[in-house]
Image (cartoon, rainbow, N blue to C red; front, side, top):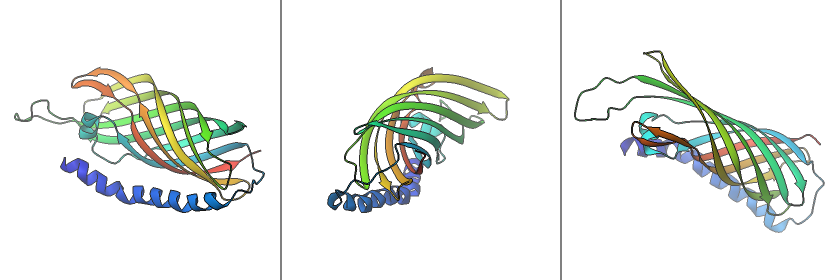
Length: 211
């Protein structure tokens, strides 16, 4: 519990910045109804904070996790857009004894996961600030390395996710992005029960219109 509380206080400034960012950008959307010609195909980069869904994962990998994402967005028609993304994250931790009352050695761990994501967004309005909501599917490749015993565990799993956020038009070619998403990635059974690799992710990014 103490570790979780410390992690929350570390990311609290980031969460507050996201809320303030969205609040400030949503004000012009209320008063601005003028439509401005804009690009339909975007490429962008985003980074943020990942909070794992499973408590056991958080206990083992008790460091902050900062994912990075490369994404493509295509406004296909009306208020709908198709998006694809490649997300990468990594972190370090150590094994946890199944019997805390007994002394046990621990092993250093390193975790890596790359995820391909594909989905559909619905955009609410076309003003300077445009909120959106969407969902899609994912396919993840992951590796857990036991650094001091030369042991690796590799795997790949399918999953799905839900997301919501907003894009703010800086000019004709550039847009700022804020996004919150929740992913579900069931990864089978481990030594401490079912393994879930999904969780909550907050991202901030920048999108460039290509055409």
